[in-house]
Length: 85
Ligand SMILES: [Zn+2]
Image (cartoon, rainbow, N blue to C red; front, side, top):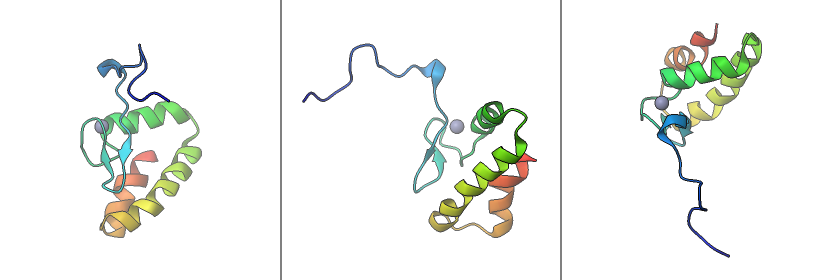
């Protein structure tokens, strides 16, 4: 078994993914609190007109985040849910 990156698999800055690092819930690309603006845009593009699906998805992300980071319910709502409406 080999370790290390396979040829041609180097990550490209142009396709940087704004994913959440856990348990800090900061963006892996720009280190802003996740979802950062690029992550929100990517999620909105991914779900398209399915705003209900987007809000359900973010609600599922909120539950583990609420265990890991100490935010008030209002702060959690603003960060995870409010922007999906
Ligand atoms: Zn980001």
